Length: 77
Image 1 (cartoon, rainbow, N blue to C red):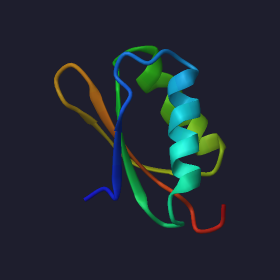
Image 2: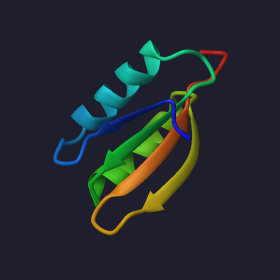
Image 3: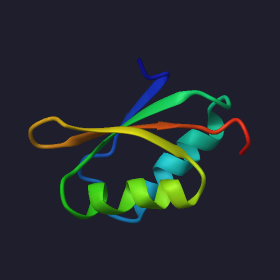
Image 4: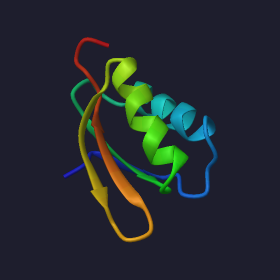
């Protein structure tokens, strides 16, 4: 169960990554965020960018028309 959830469907790259990162930075260390992303470039780019910044991508679920990405804020960030 995610601690917070944001719907970024319809949000273009790289704005969806920036909004995800800003949300994670406001969350408590170790908490879990669920992000809804469009297919294509958003789901291809955002998880990789988050991993490169040290966030833990725990799952990517295909929900028929969009993807639910679960990412955990590291305790070390």
